[in-house]
Length: 170
Image (cartoon, rainbow, N blue to C red; front, side):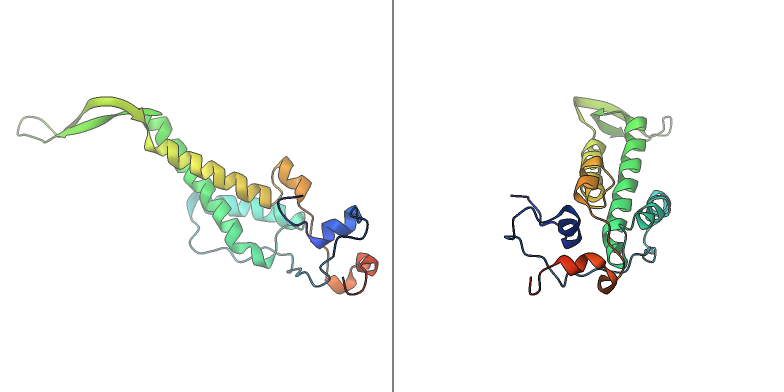
């Protein structure tokens, strides 16, 4: 049994493989395919990713007016990944606890490594960002796995000729 229910349009295009046992959702919502308004909160790398990916998803008929929040989350996760990557390149993946020596008249403030090495906390942020990117990318059909699961939204439901094959009352 699949982990998630398939969209009705995907069931229709693949054919009814359940020999009549599967019910089609005749009233499934089909939001308008469009690029939603860009959230004001997106800046920098997140905004650049929105501007890059939104037109691609719209051309593939995979982005609708209802997908603003999910796409914003994907773009924000991308920005977190980029920021974490910059810090890791600068600081390294393994760091040591530091002690800050206060400035004196003759010496400026300085940091002295002490203690055992440990994983840079930016690694955790990067890992979480990667997981979020994978999750949202799959949902939008941006990975091979996701493309196998996602069906593009057709035009208006009333105009869809495939609906004639859905049994009445299904």
